Image (cartoon, rainbow, N blue to C red; front, side, top):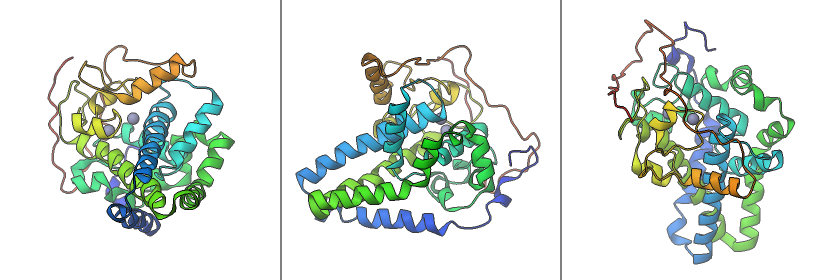
Amino acid sequence: MASGTRSAPAQQTRTKWDIVAGIAVIHAGALLAPWTFTWSAFWVFVVLQFATGLLGVTLCYHRLLAHRSFRVPKWLEYFLTLCGSLAVQGGPIKWVATHRVHHAYSDRASDPHTPQRGFWWAHMLWLFAYDELFDEPENVKRFASDLSRDPVHRWIEATMAWQSVGLGVLLYALGGLPWLVWGLFFRTAFVYHATWLVNSAAHLWGYQSFDTNEGSRNNWWVALVSYGEGWHNNHHAYLHSAAHGLRWWEFDVTYLVIRGLQAMRLASRIRLPQGSPARLSDPWPGRAPVPGARPVPVPSLSL
Ligand SMILES: [Zn+2]
Ligand SMILES: [Zn+2]
């Protein structure tokens, strides 16, 4: 629970072996990529990483569902959510709830993936540890109450694994092993690490344009592989902005796609930075420090 007396590590009580096995299988399959390369498989990879990574996770799960930084028609929201679900990063309700926990407690004890517990913890190890704050169904429901009331989102959540099994069967039927490896295993592993770098590298390395009282950074190379999500300090400062790149060099392809949807009259009410940047208040004054934690220096810069 998100009460003020919680100390996070005590809540991580067991290993989620199903997640360990799933991620291991994805990576094992991805290792076959060099031996199964064909140009058609490569282009299947390109199209599907765009569909699941950019449209699905970055544009839909993150900027649309978690932060409601713009609006699209419901049919498009559901289609884009399906794209996100095919990234195998969890259903939309669980993903959004976990992400909102990250913003509520960024680089504090209850942040699901703070690099104050080490790079690899923030990058992927956190996924393997059960944490009641974002694993208990009642807490998931609480942090994503809007989505958990929607029966279509609940259905997408419940059938997530089967959607990828179906896609895998389709890819194998259409293009044999090369399409299966490049379109499912290698593509999923690629998008995993692009997303995970936002949690690890973009909370460690880069510059801060805003004093947000946590460790988020703007990192150009994370932005390149994660479709603009690497401008992460800007995002922590302006959570509801559809644009994460705010300076001329901060290339943000996801925002360009949102503007493209707007030009096609498919996106509206696009939110941009307004007012003072958000600064995280400390929800646990006097909390016990996380074991092994290093203080994250937060320089004060202004835009
Ligand atoms: Zn966010
Ligand atoms: Zn963050």
